[in-house]
Length: 459
Ligand code: PFF
Image (cartoon, rainbow, N blue to C red; front, side, top):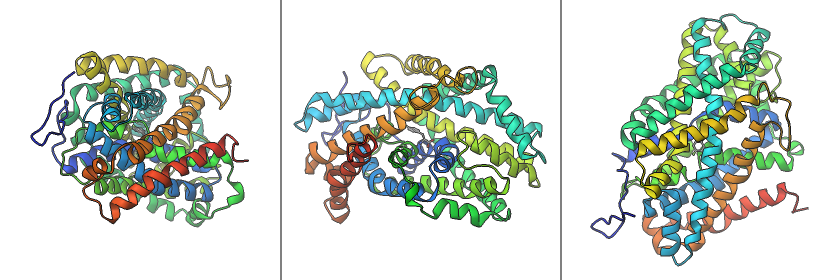
């Protein structure tokens, strides 16, 4: 195992560094902003009754997500290895145990499982580029748009094909390595996505149902909150920020010493949350304007946004650009999902990056077939949380990510010394104290509370 030391005695990364602070922020933002914001947030919020769920979600993002993200980045930068090796190395170095590597292992598995279904949904967005170009949505009725979606996901060959294409794209970028692959894509994608969300928002405001959409999203009915919807809010916070599985840790490993972790985290959390809120504000008015139901599930975005585009002047253009951007957003997230597994294999088994990526990609593709079939052939094969897709989603978002996040923030708060963490976070002022308090008490207690509450242990 290589261990390179820099002049000041710190380790340096084996995979190269980000070219600048901005490049890192862009890459983490690229990983955070994805299907989670635009596809998942609205449908999960819809299924969990809106208002109260959204408030709990926002609280989880700020009170738990932010300290966990900072912990992940600081651990990543201090360890400068893949998440498995980093946790092992720091575990020993900080007087704990090498067994902390299992936290990294949990993340590697979570990334593989998440990407297995993420790629399937990303495949839908690829198909919707083609559908947009063909003009099928122009002036289409809600029924026609709905039928278009049902026919598409009902055909396992098409869904399987687009899943395959998307995995191919993901493997291609990850195989090329950190710097060349990631940076350029995100630089224009996130701003462009923001602009298009604003266009959609404008359309939603003019739909006459904007007030109803806003009311749905922000009027809390705490009576509607169940144990499971609180857990779903926490899971969504982890999922959307890409935390709890070592992705951000893997990116942190390539972060230059002088970059502020607090500043970078705040920028990413703000960008990610804004895009999710915008997506909700654009989608819910359309849901009500067209007599659809917010709790409709994974098809929600695909059943609403094409309607709006179909009515707009220049709709074919906007719709195409939108689904291209959404596919890009999914692409940059997929990279983050593969990175822990790939970096681990490269370092642990001395494989080339290309070999590791192709191997991991094939495995993920294969597992993903379960989710491909969940919307057609195996749609009625339900157990535990529902279809195979539902189960993989539930297990990863609601169990693995919160558990991973708990262990990560616990490690940063209780196992790592004050010296190490204040060294990484740049000083011991008020901000540092706030982080440390959150990492030691607020976040662990919050996560534990939600997890124990969900399994009914809190009465
Ligand atoms: N944050 C991504 C999204 O919201 O779409 C999903 C994701 C990407 C989760 C990368 C985890 C990860 F490592």
